[in-house]
Amino acid sequence: MAAGGAADAAQAPPASILWVGNSFFFYNNSLHSHFGKLARSAGVKVRGVSATISGAGLDWHDMAALLRPAGLGGYSFTRDNEIRFEPPGRQFDAVIMMDCSQCPLHPKLAQRFQATVREDAAIARARGVRPILFMSWAYKDRPAMTARLAAAYTAAGKANGALVIPAGLAFERALRSHPEIELYAADKRHPSLAGTYLAACTVYATLFDKSPAGLSYTAGLSPEVAGELQTAAWKAARDYRGS
Picture 1 (spheres, helix red, strand yellow):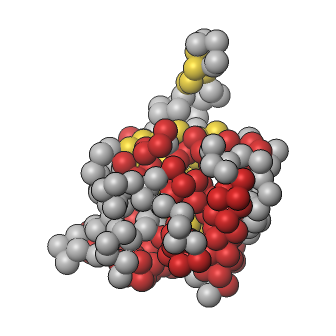
Picture 2 (tube, one colour; picture 1 turned 45 degrees about the vertical axis):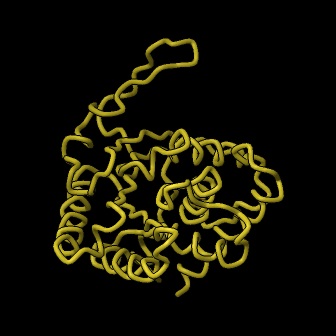
């Protein structure tokens, strides 16, 4: 098992998720939105709320405040713009956490990354929320980041019994097998729409332990491109879990 353990992996997929991260999450109208639509195309409804700060490290977020009972996510708006109140108490089954791109690797921040994951995982579990880590991808012009990020997130996942979503490894696989699909925005850091879709497919493959291949939601990408990204996500998630 690459991260977490058998008991962690055997847990039922979450029905409500808090996404805590930065602009890598909120680009392209938010990763949580694409994941929710992808899951719905599989007949599964997953509620999602995104808490992101531009350029943020994980330690910028106050996890205790975000997960306070009946706090964040306590109400939402319907399509008719009416307020819908959620039941009081715990609002989320799981929290998906991502640090800044370089934070797990930087000599002055790497230990802080591990410490923050440890603290936030404990806070989440104390509130009945499952902690999950999102392994980010390398910069387009710095592919060597992939292996280092994978090692850092895997270590944090094992140390805290947390499942790891190997989005960075899915990027590496898709770039290797289909270099014609552009996964990056012009800055070579943030995801293109295809990159966000690939990340959403990797989240699906990891949480449900199922291939997203054949799901009808494509985020507006061509069926051919979406199909290649669905396959890359599944292979990355499958191989990572089995490694």
